[in-house]
Length: 186
Ligand SMILES: [Zn+2]
Image (tube, rainbow, N blue to C red; front, side, top):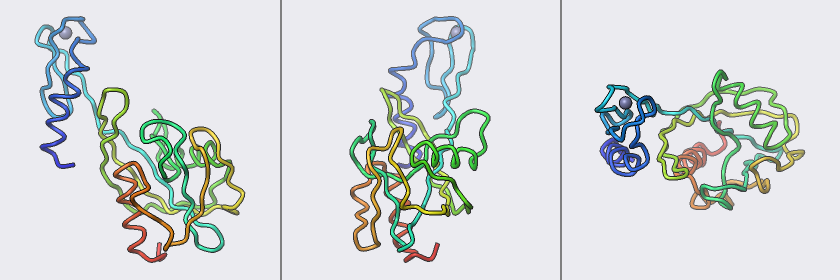
């Protein structure tokens, strides 16, 4: 999604949700910049900042990628990578550790930052902008992963069996396409 599309979504779709000023309550909020709304009444400015999220690339002893199946909307039932949004006050590495424990019951031995990719995450009637930070993670024994929290099931797929189209979130799909191009060299 390019910046013009994001601006359109902010003004049109998100603009329908964010109408009342959270400070003075007047129906005078308008999209001011592609990440803010401003109140015509009291001048209050509300920021819809880009949220940080993490995604983990984990492989088992045979080099197969650990894939999760989404238990919740959006795109419930599609493939995903372990990870999630950074909570307030957390570092990205802390988020990674927390999510891997919550979703898989595994402890991370080491994590190496690879790169980041922007994403638009639609939830409820709001399109949130996020930046997904991708980490290569090592765990003691990936085969011990137990699906929990918002994960329906855990799959392990070798390179030839990974189908990027099965990943419901566009950013994760792109991460997986990039991963496949590396031919296991990450
Ligand atoms: Zn106001």
